[in-house]
Amino acid sequence: MQATQVKTVVDPVCGMTVNPAAAAGSFEYKGDTYYFCSVHCKNRFSAAPEQFLNNPAVSAAVPIQIQRTESRATRQS
Image (cartoon, rainbow, N blue to C red; front, side, top):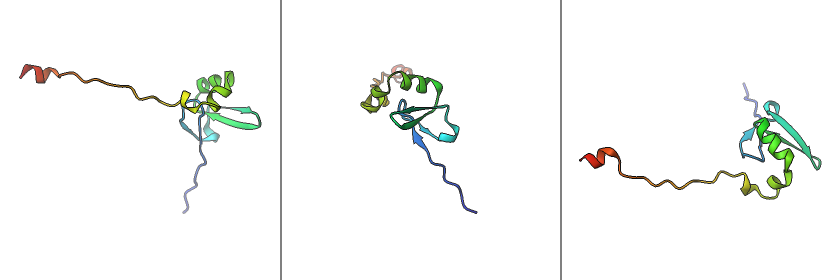
């Protein structure tokens, strides 16, 4: 028995991997079809496609800086 490999694409807004057959929506722009994980991502893209196509860093997740403080257990010792 051979497993069927599903072709996936990347949502240009959030970067999530999407199965086109199960996508929440699609949008055609300049002859290419883009698929989305949610209607929210599709709506953001359709409002300003060039923002996401010309600057992928706009949609990339940006790590945040976390500063850890002393825990209560440490302070009570």
